[in-house]
Amino acid sequence: MTDQTPDPTPDQAAVLDYVTGARWFGGKGRETRGATVRRLGAVDTGPDGPPVVVEVVEVTYADGGTEHYQVPLALYTDAETRLDHAFVGWWEDPEHGWVHGYDAVHDRAAMAGWLRGFVAAREGGPGTGGSGEVGGLRFERLPGHELDPETTASVFSGEQSNSSVFFGEDAILKLFRKVTPGPNPDIEIHRALTAAGSEHVAALYGWVEAQAPGSDDGDVLQLGMLQQFLRTASDGFELALASVRNLFAEADLHAHEVGGDFAAESERLGLALREIHTALAAALPAGAAPLPPAELAATMTRRLEQVVPAVPQLAEHEERLRRVFDAVAGLDEVPVQRVHGDLHLGQTLRTALGWKVVDFEGEPAKSLAERILPDSPWRDVAGMLRSFAYAPASVLRSHGEDPQGATQLAFRAAEWTHRNQNHFLHAYAGGELSAADRTLLDAYTADKAVYECLYETRNRPSWVTIPLAAVAEIGATP
Image 1 (cartoon, rainbow, N blue to C red):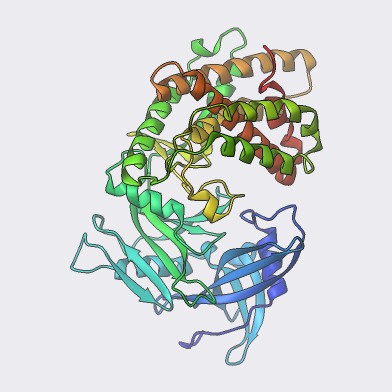
Image 2: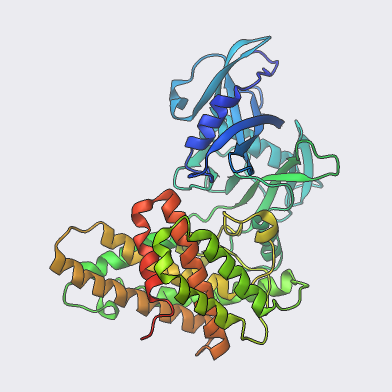
């Protein structure tokens, strides 16, 4: 390519096809009407890298809603077969003819530009913070860590709602795919916990942002965050699955007797979450009065009413779930603070130094305004309890149709779930729960299961039986 950066106008239909077909697209199950593509800025990839532009795609839905997705494009005049899997489209440029556009996340040469931006955003020498603007993008850097500008970028293929790129073993960049004007809670909370010296998160190194398209009042889109790469980390959900498989392989042993017993890890995770909640309450004071119990109960009931038409199987459980939510209205108050908002085992990493919690963006289906609202810490606890049920249920799905064997495995799955839930909960609470805390936890657990029913119906219909099984037990007479 020439030194002049091509400025093609992306074909909006092609970009919409790419976005809606991506794993990170959050609008699955909704009918789209079209897309508008707007340029946020360009990334400096140096003399050897391809031109890279960052686009924001406004997806319009038939129901009247809109969402915005970030798509960085690496531009080439010739086809790059190595990037066929990331091909977005080709468009005509007045100066350069046809230009091939690829999702830049999958291109090492393109992603090196983000590292260049963070390295340049430094004031006063090594270890200091600072900011710098390049091509309409602003790179913000926190003090305390010196980046290695020579590390090679490589994409992490295991994520869904966002995209992550490693820079050697030094740092990891998470690019947010779905973006909303205003502070991203993942950046906000990581920044607060990093400043507080929390041992249970990966340290934040910096973030990148741009002015929101069409905004005249300074609204920004926070596009990505750079943080510590946890080299020894293992995914919490994968560890739980391994423990369940170990149990299933030992036909004559109970969960506490097998070598892969997970209970001690569940206990450590409960302690870690309690410390995170304590640190968050101090670092980001909610500044809000306790939540009126009747209001919380009404919100949960309203969500149930919205989900039932989409998940008809919930209808037979609706009355019982309403009673679980109504019980909350009888409480005195519901203390709130900043929380994770979408916590499960897949949002945890086990390192040589203990448990780390990641992805503080909150529940994807909620708006940004909802995700940053203070909430009860029991929401996070409920999310973890549901995750301890998902792990064995996921393993059960991989087994055959032998009825006798299935019954035995289901019994062992329930044993694993209850053991790990109890160890986690006891560690988090520091003892037995009060009646009020139990009422809240039951309601948040039911609310989470209802959300899971909607999510599975839209994304993995054959999995909806997992949360439906939980719904059938919640509030049922022993």
